[in-house]
Image (cartoon, rainbow, N blue to C red; front, side, top):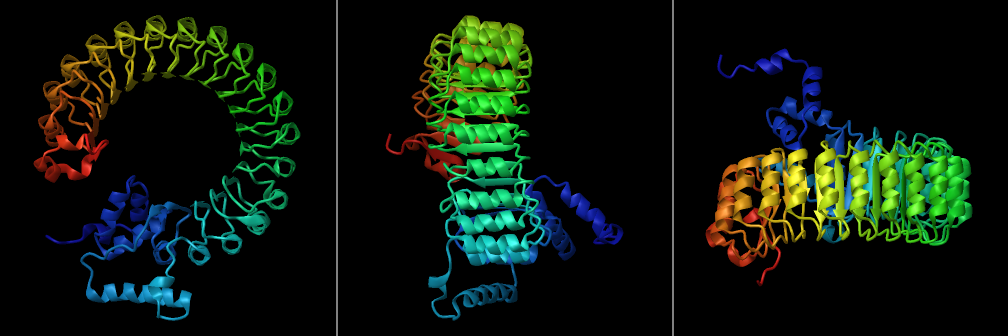
Length: 578
């Protein structure tokens, strides 16, 4: 019978709730909630995660949401995101008046009178909003308060006293204070993850109270502070993740971490300007389970410190060295000899690390899957050839401004690393078509960036188009020798292409662009700034020919009025006046 509701009469609430939980997009969930009142109620019950902006009227918004979604366990609030009370399209007049009455009641409750209500309305999340959040979401397990600068220790104390099941708390950029942090330590006995980066008002006292309170459960801690590391190390024996961005931390603090945090698996040290190899030696000696290590701008570390890590942390899988100018070839050689399980290596601005280091990594680290090299002026083709021959499971290779790396190294990658899916060679002047021909013959890339590699032309990109049918991202910006012929082959061979960057390619014209667009029906973004051969007609072709297009970046004067009317929301202008 037409109009008969077979679903609601046959399916119990539990089945519909389970179906809603398997919906992977917010749009699908919102659409289901509009079917009928029952589905609206059940959809609200199925929601476990909310993302809220904290600028506009966040206190009122939190109050409204807390009445609608009873089973939320994870909330992300960010003051950088805007929020406003949802517009009630198609609602009856009575419902709209209820919303206005609720807003008036809430503001009157805050201010004590109806006069001046708009002047008194908070445009940042305040302690009142935090209190409403605690009252409405008692099942909360994960909370992020990013740059919510208007909340204080009082609001945080009220929150933790009511949300007893918190396991993850992100307070980045908030004014926490020692009292608030002490309350977190005292009440949140199940807390595992805590982020205190850029938090003001903290001293050693607060960190000591935190460590004494929830130190036994805390597994991840991230903060930018130069005090309290001793207290955290002594009070958090189960700590697995520690990220520190400190200036004045000394060796004694890291010695405490090495002696106490024996379960540590991830350690990230940013901008450490006072500690030396002594601290890293203690970490290597005590943290035997360490798997992920980041050393950024640690100026007084040398090869000896890295050798201590290699000797003591045999399970290391991820290593990033960024701007540590005293670490050289010998330190990384020791990693290659000892850390056989290394899967990802990133070397950024490491001028003293040379070919011999990567030769040893190629011999010893057979499981390496990702290699990142940025401004490593002493690394050349010999090193890349060794990596290619020894690490044949390599999937990601990102190289930027390493001017000694040329065709020979990349040809070896194409010959040996058949699992490679991501290749980025930005501003590598010695890499040309020969390298990409080898890659096209040996690898099936999904991501390719050859921006600024001036020797690459049509032949190289055509080889990629013929050999990499699964390519979905391509950046060929600043390639002066690239023309329409390559665009034709890309259109034929890469139908899955979604993102393409053609900026500063002077020889590509509307003709090549039309061939690309004709066959790449999944294209979502196209950057073509400073391409003199592309005119308003080419821009119109992209906009009209790609049904999935979401972003087109081009000069403003190349966009016709008709194109603006047709797709004004997807067009971005890099330079307005040119």
